[in-house]
Length: 111
Image: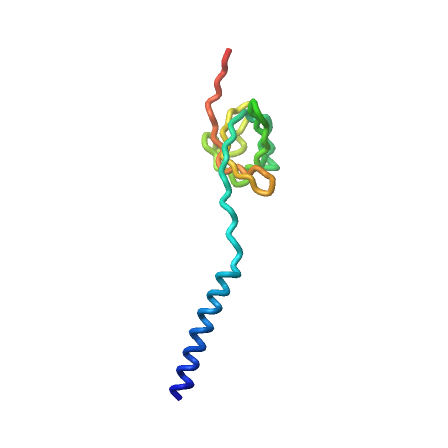
């Protein structure tokens, strides 16, 4: 009886440790951390139904997906106007710029 009980205990321990090790080696790798980038420019267009915004700087223009963005200086996407100067913190995902934070900057009029 003692031999059977000890055999079952050893078999149970062996099974637990081998399945745990196999689960660790077979788990998918976590995705690489997405780099948060910044873009500063002027808003050229806003599409409320599509939740997108196009902004241009002296060097480039970008289209941002605003679906999950937080707004600083704005209450919502409805308050963003063409010509506003903004800084957007975004990540690139599947070839799209996904905005994380849209910050309204002061506009300067040089005359």
